[in-house]
Length: 257
Image (cartoon, rainbow, N blue to C red; front, side, top):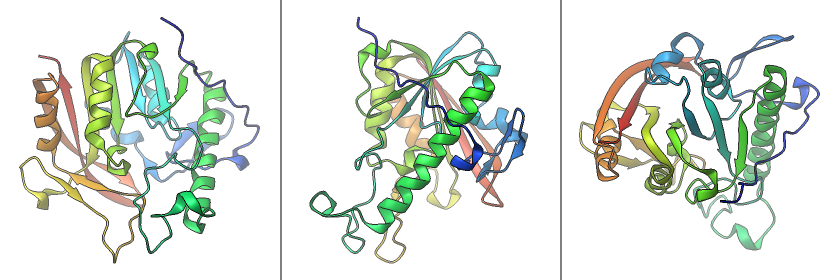
């Protein structure tokens, strides 16, 4: 089997070139505040999973706080990020924002601003990757079409990422093909959605949520995991600090039956 084309690390000299999605304690710098502060309840966020000697596939690492946390716990980590081209983000195709026909025109202001934001978050990953001495590898490609060259994994981690994707079930299916053990999903909890297997569409004409597609119930994931052959699962609930608010969350850990 040929080797997957992992991305060579990018040398980022200064935090001035970065945005930080996660609050993180950077060696030689100190505490840098981000949009999400997972430090106090990271065990809950990761579902209490044991990572020692596990090979883990992480979809969408952002700053990499969880990447480095899993490495501290003894995991080998491969992260997946989309290439930084115009198709890198599953943006909701709002006609009113110029996103429906974007293939034939110039980049919209929303696209340009968001691209720069994500580029600097990815810079933050590579800066922290260097100063932490991380051995995590990054694959650029679609999470919906993970190549067999990546090999097999003991676990896959998808945290607060599927709400931003056009087809979350395609990504879960793709990950399941590569995972022999456990799937871990963490998302916002919306009790008002009820207890059924609900995936609720977020964008409306009024809210213009072009970067967010879905809200989920835990049962949406457990039911689909059962379909994929992960018949044993547990769901835990917790709160996390994000955007200066305490947000209700849930984590599903599903294991192959």
